[in-house]
Amino acid sequence: GVMERSREQLLRQTCEAVVLGVLHPRTAITLVLQVLSDAGSLLSCCLNAACMALLDAGLPLAALFCGVTCALQPDGTILLDPTARQEQEARATLTFAIGSSGRKVLMATTKGSCSVDEMQQCLAAAQRAADTIFQFYRDSVRRRYSKS
Amino acid sequence: FSICSRTVEPLEYYRRFLKENCRPDGRELGEFRTTTVNIGKCLCSITTADGSALVKLGNTTVICGVKAELAAPAVDSASKGYIVPNVELPSLCAERFRSGPPGEEAQAASQFIADVIENSQMIVKEDLCIASGKLAWVLYCDIICLDYDGNLLDASVFALLAALKNVQLPLVTINEETGLSEVNLKQKNPLIIRKHPVATSFAIFDDTLLIVDPTAEEEDLATGTVTIVTDEEGRLCSVHKPGGSPLTGAKLQDCITRAITRHKEVKKLIDKVIKSVTPK
Image (tube, rainbow over all chains, first blue to last red; front, top):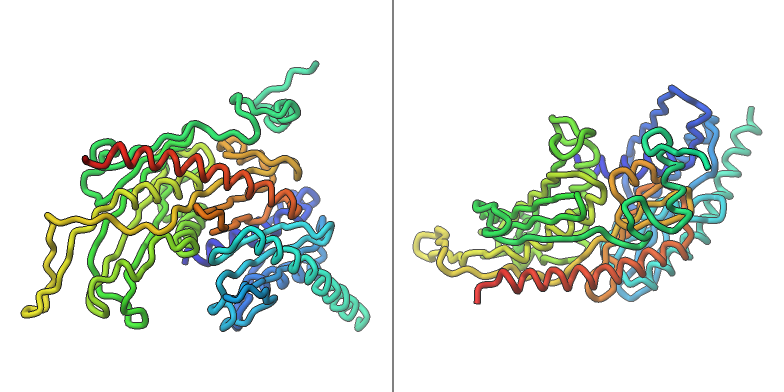
Protein backbone atom coordinates (compact mmCIF):
# COMPACT_ATOMS: atom_id res chain seq x y z
CA GLY A 1 0.00 0.00 0.00
CA VAL A 2 0.94 3.68 0.14
CA MET A 3 2.50 3.33 3.61
CA GLU A 4 4.96 0.70 2.33
CA ARG A 5 5.81 2.85 -0.72
CA SER A 6 6.46 5.79 1.58
CA ARG A 7 8.75 3.70 3.83
CA GLU A 8 10.54 2.30 0.78
CA GLN A 9 11.22 5.82 -0.46
CA LEU A 10 12.66 6.81 2.95
CA LEU A 11 14.90 3.74 3.15
CA ARG A 12 16.00 3.90 -0.48
CA GLN A 13 17.02 7.54 -0.38
CA THR A 14 18.84 7.04 2.95
CA CYS A 15 20.83 4.13 1.51
CA GLU A 16 21.50 6.03 -1.72
CA ALA A 17 23.08 8.83 0.30
CA VAL A 18 25.67 6.51 1.88
CA VAL A 19 26.34 3.79 -0.70
CA LEU A 20 29.16 4.80 -3.05
CA GLY A 21 27.27 3.95 -6.21
CA VAL A 22 29.93 5.39 -8.48
CA LEU A 23 32.16 2.41 -7.67
CA HIS A 24 29.56 0.00 -9.03
CA PRO A 25 28.24 1.33 -12.33
CA ARG A 26 25.49 -0.52 -14.21
CA THR A 27 24.67 -2.41 -11.02
CA ALA A 28 21.36 -2.78 -9.21
CA ILE A 29 21.48 -3.20 -5.45
CA THR A 30 18.25 -4.72 -4.13
CA LEU A 31 17.46 -4.42 -0.45
CA VAL A 32 14.60 -6.64 0.70
CA LEU A 33 13.22 -6.12 4.20
CA GLN A 34 10.75 -8.63 5.62
CA VAL A 35 8.99 -7.68 8.84
CA LEU A 36 8.86 -10.75 11.08
CA SER A 37 7.27 -8.99 14.04
CA ASP A 38 6.43 -5.39 14.84
CA ALA A 39 6.63 -4.41 18.50
CA GLY A 40 7.20 -0.67 17.98
CA SER A 41 10.03 1.44 16.50
CA LEU A 42 9.67 -0.48 13.23
CA LEU A 43 11.19 2.11 10.92
CA SER A 44 14.38 2.51 12.96
CA CYS A 45 14.69 -1.28 13.18
CA CYS A 46 14.44 -1.40 9.37
CA LEU A 47 17.14 1.28 9.08
CA ASN A 48 19.49 -0.61 11.39
CA ALA A 49 18.85 -3.88 9.54
CA ALA A 50 19.47 -2.17 6.20
CA CYS A 51 22.78 -0.69 7.33
CA MET A 52 24.05 -3.93 8.82
CA ALA A 53 23.03 -5.82 5.68
CA LEU A 54 24.93 -3.33 3.52
CA LEU A 55 27.95 -3.80 5.83
CA ASP A 56 27.65 -7.57 5.62
CA ALA A 57 27.45 -7.40 1.83
CA GLY A 58 30.75 -5.55 1.82
CA LEU A 59 29.44 -2.62 -0.21
CA PRO A 60 31.53 0.54 -0.08
CA LEU A 61 29.79 3.05 2.16
CA ALA A 62 30.59 6.73 2.72
CA ALA A 63 29.29 6.47 6.30
CA LEU A 64 27.22 4.21 8.49
CA PHE A 65 23.74 5.14 9.63
CA CYS A 66 21.47 3.99 12.40
CA GLY A 67 17.80 4.51 13.13
CA VAL A 68 16.52 5.95 16.41
CA THR A 69 12.87 6.47 17.35
CA CYS A 70 11.90 9.02 20.03
CA ALA A 71 8.45 9.19 21.57
CA LEU A 72 7.28 12.40 23.23
CA GLN A 73 5.00 11.44 26.06
CA PRO A 74 2.01 13.58 27.03
CA ASP A 75 3.89 14.90 30.09
CA GLY A 76 6.84 16.04 27.95
CA THR A 77 9.40 13.32 28.74
CA ILE A 78 11.39 11.82 25.86
CA LEU A 79 11.36 8.05 25.50
CA LEU A 80 13.84 6.38 23.17
CA ASP A 81 13.04 3.14 21.33
CA PRO A 82 9.36 3.04 22.37
CA THR A 83 7.21 -0.09 22.33
CA ALA A 84 4.07 -0.17 20.21
CA ARG A 85 1.95 0.77 23.23
CA GLN A 86 4.19 3.71 24.12
CA GLU A 87 4.10 4.94 20.51
CA GLN A 88 0.31 4.90 20.54
CA GLU A 89 0.08 6.84 23.78
CA ALA A 90 2.75 9.34 22.75
CA ARG A 91 1.96 12.88 21.72
CA ALA A 92 4.51 12.68 18.91
CA THR A 93 6.89 10.04 17.53
CA LEU A 94 10.05 11.14 15.72
CA THR A 95 12.32 8.77 13.81
CA PHE A 96 15.81 9.86 12.77
CA ALA A 97 18.52 8.18 10.75
CA ILE A 98 21.82 9.44 12.21
CA GLY A 99 25.03 9.20 10.17
CA SER A 100 28.29 8.08 11.69
CA SER A 101 30.38 11.05 10.49
CA GLY A 102 29.48 14.04 12.64
CA ARG A 103 26.20 12.52 13.87
CA LYS A 104 24.31 14.41 11.17
CA VAL A 105 20.66 13.77 10.28
CA LEU A 106 20.29 11.61 7.18
CA MET A 107 16.58 10.99 7.43
CA ALA A 108 13.82 12.44 9.59
CA THR A 109 10.16 11.64 9.78
CA THR A 110 7.62 12.66 12.40
CA LYS A 111 4.19 11.57 13.51
CA GLY A 112 2.04 13.90 15.60
CA SER A 113 3.00 17.50 16.32
CA CYS A 114 5.58 18.94 18.68
CA SER A 115 7.24 22.26 19.38
CA VAL A 116 10.56 23.18 17.78
CA ASP A 117 12.43 22.90 21.10
CA GLU A 118 11.04 19.44 21.72
CA MET A 119 12.20 18.35 18.27
CA GLN A 120 15.72 19.65 18.94
CA GLN A 121 15.79 17.85 22.30
CA CYS A 122 14.71 14.59 20.66
CA LEU A 123 17.35 15.06 17.98
CA ALA A 124 20.05 15.58 20.61
CA ALA A 125 18.89 12.47 22.49
CA ALA A 126 18.90 10.49 19.25
CA GLN A 127 22.42 11.64 18.41
CA ARG A 128 23.63 10.47 21.83
CA ALA A 129 21.87 7.12 21.42
CA ALA A 130 23.51 6.68 18.01
CA ASP A 131 26.84 6.09 19.78
CA THR A 132 25.44 2.99 21.48
CA ILE A 133 24.07 1.63 18.22
CA PHE A 134 27.31 2.17 16.31
CA GLN A 135 29.18 0.37 19.10
CA PHE A 136 26.72 -2.52 18.64
CA TYR A 137 27.55 -2.56 14.92
CA ARG A 138 31.25 -2.73 15.71
CA ASP A 139 30.79 -5.56 18.22
CA SER A 140 28.57 -7.55 15.84
CA VAL A 141 31.00 -7.23 12.95
CA ARG A 142 33.89 -8.15 15.22
CA ARG A 143 32.04 -11.24 16.42
CA ARG A 144 31.16 -12.23 12.88
CA TYR A 145 34.72 -12.11 11.64
CA SER A 146 36.35 -13.56 14.76
CA LYS A 147 34.33 -16.81 14.42
CA SER A 148 35.59 -17.58 10.92
CA PHE B 1 36.25 32.15 -18.60
CA SER B 2 34.90 28.88 -19.98
CA ILE B 3 31.55 28.49 -21.65
CA CYS B 4 29.30 26.41 -19.42
CA SER B 5 26.13 25.09 -21.01
CA ARG B 6 22.91 24.57 -19.10
CA THR B 7 22.19 21.36 -20.98
CA VAL B 8 25.70 19.93 -21.17
CA GLU B 9 26.89 20.64 -17.61
CA PRO B 10 23.81 21.59 -15.60
CA LEU B 11 25.46 21.21 -12.21
CA GLU B 12 28.41 23.47 -13.08
CA TYR B 13 25.97 25.99 -14.55
CA TYR B 14 24.01 26.02 -11.31
CA ARG B 15 27.12 26.24 -9.14
CA ARG B 16 28.10 29.46 -10.92
CA PHE B 17 24.85 31.07 -9.79
CA LEU B 18 24.86 29.58 -6.29
CA LYS B 19 28.33 31.07 -5.73
CA GLU B 20 26.76 34.50 -6.22
CA ASN B 21 23.89 33.50 -3.84
CA CYS B 22 21.22 33.49 -6.51
CA ARG B 23 19.56 31.15 -9.00
CA PRO B 24 19.17 31.16 -12.80
CA ASP B 25 15.57 32.37 -12.60
CA GLY B 26 16.73 35.44 -10.64
CA ARG B 27 15.51 34.32 -7.23
CA GLU B 28 17.57 34.43 -4.06
CA LEU B 29 18.24 31.21 -2.18
CA GLY B 30 15.49 31.88 0.33
CA GLU B 31 12.92 33.29 -2.06
CA PHE B 32 9.70 31.58 -3.10
CA ARG B 33 8.16 31.70 -6.56
CA THR B 34 5.00 33.72 -7.14
CA THR B 35 2.17 31.93 -5.36
CA THR B 36 -1.41 32.30 -6.59
CA VAL B 37 -4.53 30.53 -5.38
CA ASN B 38 -8.05 30.36 -6.84
CA ILE B 39 -10.83 29.02 -4.66
CA GLY B 40 -14.40 28.02 -5.30
CA LYS B 41 -16.81 27.21 -8.08
CA CYS B 42 -16.45 30.49 -9.99
CA LEU B 43 -12.68 30.84 -10.11
CA CYS B 44 -11.55 27.26 -9.78
CA SER B 45 -14.15 25.80 -12.18
CA ILE B 46 -14.77 22.39 -10.62
CA THR B 47 -18.54 22.73 -10.37
CA THR B 48 -19.14 19.14 -9.21
CA ALA B 49 -16.89 19.29 -6.15
CA ASP B 50 -18.01 20.43 -2.71
CA GLY B 51 -14.81 22.44 -2.32
CA SER B 52 -12.01 23.17 -4.75
CA ALA B 53 -8.84 25.17 -5.07
CA LEU B 54 -6.21 25.74 -7.73
CA VAL B 55 -2.71 26.65 -6.56
CA LYS B 56 0.15 27.85 -8.74
CA LEU B 57 3.67 27.96 -7.31
CA GLY B 58 5.57 29.45 -10.25
CA ASN B 59 4.85 26.91 -12.99
CA THR B 60 3.84 24.09 -10.65
CA THR B 61 0.06 23.86 -10.85
CA VAL B 62 -1.95 21.70 -8.47
CA ILE B 63 -5.73 21.44 -8.27
CA CYS B 64 -7.58 19.97 -5.29
CA GLY B 65 -11.22 18.88 -5.30
CA VAL B 66 -13.02 17.76 -2.15
CA LYS B 67 -16.15 15.60 -2.39
CA ALA B 68 -18.17 14.83 0.71
CA GLU B 69 -20.11 11.58 0.86
CA LEU B 70 -21.97 9.72 3.59
CA ALA B 71 -20.87 6.39 5.03
CA ALA B 72 -21.18 4.28 8.14
CA PRO B 73 -18.31 4.83 10.56
CA ALA B 74 -15.88 2.00 11.33
CA VAL B 75 -16.80 -0.35 14.15
CA ASP B 76 -13.79 0.49 16.34
CA SER B 77 -14.16 4.27 15.89
CA ALA B 78 -17.91 4.81 15.84
CA SER B 79 -17.77 8.58 16.28
CA LYS B 80 -15.17 9.32 13.61
CA GLY B 81 -15.59 10.24 9.96
CA TYR B 82 -12.99 9.69 7.25
CA ILE B 83 -10.65 11.89 5.27
CA VAL B 84 -9.17 10.17 2.22
CA PRO B 85 -6.49 12.15 0.38
CA ASN B 86 -5.16 11.03 -2.98
CA VAL B 87 -2.38 12.67 -4.95
CA GLU B 88 -2.26 12.01 -8.68
CA LEU B 89 0.63 12.72 -10.97
CA PRO B 90 -0.91 12.14 -14.41
CA SER B 91 1.31 11.82 -17.44
CA LEU B 92 0.24 15.24 -18.67
CA CYS B 93 2.07 17.07 -15.88
CA ALA B 94 5.60 16.00 -16.76
CA GLU B 95 7.48 13.70 -19.14
CA ARG B 96 8.80 11.53 -16.32
CA PHE B 97 5.33 10.25 -15.36
CA ARG B 98 3.77 7.50 -17.44
CA SER B 99 0.10 6.57 -17.47
CA GLY B 100 -0.87 3.50 -15.49
CA PRO B 101 -0.96 2.65 -11.78
CA PRO B 102 0.33 5.40 -9.46
CA GLY B 103 4.11 5.50 -9.23
CA GLU B 104 6.15 5.71 -6.04
CA GLU B 105 6.25 9.50 -5.97
CA ALA B 106 2.45 9.80 -6.14
CA GLN B 107 1.95 7.18 -3.44
CA ALA B 108 4.58 8.72 -1.16
CA ALA B 109 2.96 12.14 -1.68
CA SER B 110 -0.49 10.69 -0.80
CA GLN B 111 0.94 9.21 2.40
CA PHE B 112 2.61 12.53 3.21
CA ILE B 113 -0.67 14.44 2.81
CA ALA B 114 -2.51 11.86 4.96
CA ASP B 115 0.19 12.27 7.63
CA VAL B 116 -0.05 16.08 7.52
CA ILE B 117 -3.83 15.94 8.02
CA GLU B 118 -3.41 13.52 10.91
CA ASN B 119 -0.43 15.20 12.60
CA SER B 120 -1.75 18.75 12.40
CA GLN B 121 -5.29 17.75 13.38
CA MET B 122 -6.53 20.34 10.89
CA ILE B 123 -9.80 18.42 10.74
CA VAL B 124 -10.82 16.43 13.77
CA LYS B 125 -12.53 13.25 12.60
CA GLU B 126 -15.09 13.51 15.39
CA ASP B 127 -16.37 16.71 13.76
CA LEU B 128 -17.29 14.66 10.70
CA CYS B 129 -19.59 12.34 12.63
CA ILE B 130 -23.33 12.88 12.18
CA ALA B 131 -24.76 10.05 14.28
CA SER B 132 -22.38 7.89 16.28
CA GLY B 133 -22.20 4.38 14.91
CA LYS B 134 -24.62 5.12 12.08
CA LEU B 135 -23.61 7.96 9.79
CA ALA B 136 -20.51 10.03 9.16
CA TRP B 137 -18.99 12.18 6.44
CA VAL B 138 -16.22 10.89 4.19
CA LEU B 139 -14.13 13.62 2.60
CA TYR B 140 -12.45 12.45 -0.59
CA CYS B 141 -9.64 14.93 -1.29
CA ASP B 142 -8.27 14.51 -4.79
CA ILE B 143 -5.10 16.45 -5.47
CA ILE B 144 -4.09 16.43 -9.11
CA CYS B 145 -0.92 17.96 -10.46
CA LEU B 146 -1.52 19.70 -13.77
CA ASP B 147 2.00 20.97 -14.31
CA TYR B 148 5.02 19.64 -12.45
CA ASP B 149 7.86 22.10 -11.95
CA GLY B 150 9.16 20.97 -8.59
CA ASN B 151 7.93 21.45 -5.03
CA LEU B 152 4.87 19.25 -5.34
CA LEU B 153 4.39 18.83 -1.59
CA ASP B 154 4.12 22.54 -0.75
CA ALA B 155 1.60 23.17 -3.52
CA SER B 156 -0.44 20.07 -2.58
CA VAL B 157 -0.70 21.00 1.10
CA PHE B 158 -1.68 24.55 0.19
CA ALA B 159 -4.28 23.37 -2.35
CA LEU B 160 -5.74 20.95 0.19
CA LEU B 161 -6.01 23.64 2.87
CA ALA B 162 -7.62 26.11 0.47
CA ALA B 163 -10.09 23.52 -0.86
CA LEU B 164 -11.10 22.38 2.64
CA LYS B 165 -11.72 25.99 3.67
CA ASN B 166 -14.05 26.25 0.69
CA VAL B 167 -16.11 23.15 1.52
CA GLN B 168 -19.72 23.70 2.54
CA LEU B 169 -21.40 20.62 4.06
CA PRO B 170 -25.21 20.34 3.91
CA LEU B 171 -27.03 19.70 7.16
CA VAL B 172 -27.87 16.01 7.59
CA THR B 173 -30.48 14.74 10.03
CA ILE B 174 -31.66 11.22 10.72
CA ASN B 175 -35.40 10.80 10.57
CA GLU B 176 -36.30 8.95 13.77
CA GLU B 177 -39.35 7.22 12.32
CA THR B 178 -37.82 5.80 9.16
CA GLY B 179 -34.19 5.68 10.29
CA LEU B 180 -33.12 7.18 6.98
CA SER B 181 -30.89 10.20 6.54
CA GLU B 182 -32.28 13.45 5.20
CA VAL B 183 -29.96 15.85 3.47
CA ASN B 184 -30.93 19.51 3.57
CA LEU B 185 -29.10 21.07 0.63
CA LYS B 186 -30.45 24.52 1.39
CA GLN B 187 -28.69 24.75 4.75
CA LYS B 188 -24.93 24.51 4.41
CA ASN B 189 -22.21 24.97 6.98
CA PRO B 190 -18.50 25.37 6.39
CA LEU B 191 -16.08 22.71 7.63
CA ILE B 192 -14.45 23.32 10.98
CA ILE B 193 -10.75 23.75 10.21
CA ARG B 194 -8.86 23.80 13.49
CA LYS B 195 -5.31 24.22 12.31
CA HIS B 196 -3.73 25.64 9.16
CA PRO B 197 -0.63 23.62 8.25
CA VAL B 198 1.72 25.05 5.63
CA ALA B 199 4.57 23.10 4.03
CA THR B 200 7.97 24.57 3.09
CA SER B 201 10.36 22.48 1.02
CA PHE B 202 14.10 22.87 0.60
CA ALA B 203 16.61 21.25 -1.73
CA ILE B 204 20.12 20.43 -0.47
CA PHE B 205 22.95 21.20 -2.89
CA ASP B 206 26.47 19.78 -2.56
CA ASP B 207 25.72 18.68 1.02
CA THR B 208 25.82 22.25 2.34
CA LEU B 209 23.59 24.78 0.58
CA LEU B 210 19.87 24.92 1.24
CA ILE B 211 17.59 26.48 -1.37
CA VAL B 212 13.91 27.07 -0.83
CA ASP B 213 11.10 26.10 -3.26
CA PRO B 214 13.14 24.11 -5.81
CA THR B 215 12.07 23.88 -9.45
CA ALA B 216 12.05 20.49 -11.20
CA GLU B 217 15.52 21.16 -12.63
CA GLU B 218 16.88 22.06 -9.18
CA GLU B 219 15.29 18.97 -7.62
CA ASP B 220 17.06 16.75 -10.16
CA LEU B 221 20.44 18.33 -9.40
CA ALA B 222 19.95 18.40 -5.64
CA THR B 223 21.51 15.83 -3.32
CA GLY B 224 18.57 15.81 -0.92
CA THR B 225 15.27 17.44 0.06
CA VAL B 226 13.66 18.55 3.34
CA THR B 227 10.03 19.49 3.88
CA ILE B 228 8.90 21.20 7.08
CA VAL B 229 5.20 21.58 7.90
CA THR B 230 4.27 24.16 10.57
CA ASP B 231 0.97 25.37 11.94
CA GLU B 232 -0.06 28.84 13.09
CA GLU B 233 1.25 28.29 16.63
CA GLY B 234 4.77 27.59 15.35
CA ARG B 235 4.45 23.91 16.17
CA LEU B 236 6.03 21.34 13.89
CA CYS B 237 3.45 19.11 12.22
CA SER B 238 5.99 17.26 10.13
CA VAL B 239 9.72 17.13 9.51
CA HIS B 240 10.06 15.11 6.32
CA LYS B 241 13.57 14.40 5.21
CA PRO B 242 13.52 11.29 3.03
CA GLY B 243 17.23 10.45 3.00
CA GLY B 244 19.66 12.53 0.98
CA SER B 245 22.66 14.50 2.20
CA PRO B 246 23.18 14.61 5.96
CA LEU B 247 22.23 17.84 7.77
CA THR B 248 23.35 19.16 11.14
CA GLY B 249 20.78 20.11 13.76
CA ALA B 250 21.66 23.78 13.21
CA LYS B 251 20.92 23.63 9.46
CA LEU B 252 17.62 21.91 10.25
CA GLN B 253 16.84 24.76 12.65
CA ASP B 254 17.48 27.29 9.82
CA CYS B 255 14.93 25.43 7.70
CA ILE B 256 12.38 25.53 10.49
CA THR B 257 12.88 29.28 10.98
CA ARG B 258 12.31 29.91 7.25
CA ALA B 259 9.24 27.65 7.35
CA ILE B 260 7.70 29.65 10.18
CA THR B 261 8.16 32.89 8.18
CA ARG B 262 6.65 31.26 5.10
CA HIS B 263 3.64 30.17 7.16
CA LYS B 264 2.79 33.79 7.91
CA GLU B 265 3.01 34.74 4.22
CA VAL B 266 0.76 31.87 3.13
CA LYS B 267 -1.78 32.45 5.91
CA LYS B 268 -2.11 36.10 4.86
CA LEU B 269 -2.65 35.07 1.24
CA ILE B 270 -5.24 32.46 2.06
CA ASP B 271 -7.18 34.80 4.37
CA LYS B 272 -7.24 37.46 1.65
CA VAL B 273 -8.55 35.01 -0.96
CA ILE B 274 -11.18 33.50 1.35
CA LYS B 275 -12.46 36.97 2.20
CA SER B 276 -12.77 37.86 -1.48
CA VAL B 277 -14.74 34.66 -2.22
CA THR B 278 -17.12 34.73 0.77
CA PRO B 279 -20.55 36.08 -0.28
CA LYS B 280 -21.49 39.17 1.70
